Image 1: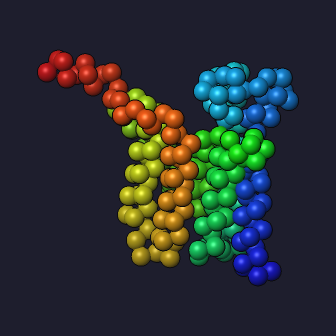
Image 2: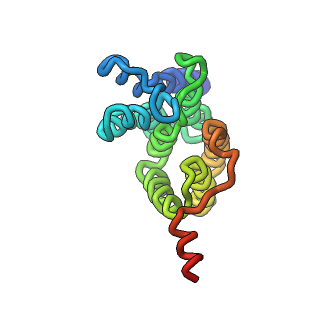
Image 3: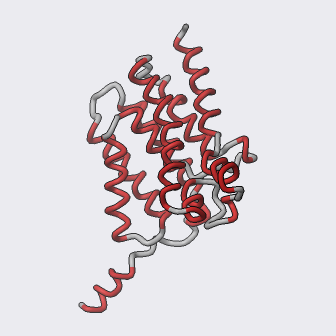
Length: 208
């Protein structure tokens, strides 16, 4: 099969799988609840956890992770699509998760799918960087959405440092660019305010 056709088919498949709202389905099928009535009204794993406990965040988040990791990993490592064709394939699950046609194009915030896609592309490197960066910046920043934006901005620096001169560099930058835009769009409701330092920073300033 020609690479161009494979790219189209895998992109469509990735978008379709990415569009499946696993957290919402788990809530409805197992618990007869609509998780959009909890937390911030988002149909993602976090609100399933708020409704039914932390373990369900892990379960639903794992499914969201896989729908990004599998198409990206299969195409990048098994089918050897490592040129610009990997860009739409990698972005499709993230876009599907964020703008699900099953939810009138109003999906989740695409964090788990983002982790999954970058795991498919880099195995452990970017997911570990994202996790550590999230932990680090959450020490100083109070607003969750700003943490995600700052983490994604730091990811660009990591990509530039980690992959200089490699063929993957520019496709990865393209993937990052649209991934970043999706994250910003999905968190825009909480980005109207300025970043807010954690309370301990103000206490530290008062002591000095």
